[in-house]
Image 1: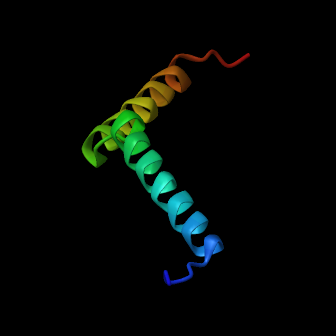
Image 2: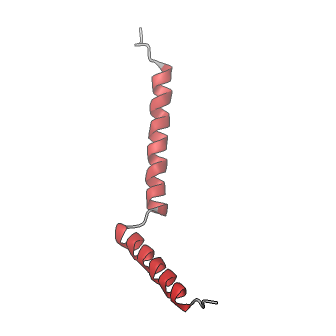
Image 3: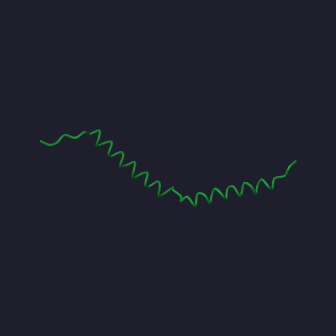
Length: 58
């Protein structure tokens, strides 16, 4: 006789594997290196300061 299996465990394991593969795919597609993220943040801060300096005070 075959060994009985718990279908809930099989389903949950399948779903976890699917979620892991989707997460890996999203990391490749949307992830940015830390240096690139930091450079973008610094550039936005520099642009904000430049804009603040050019505002007129009435």
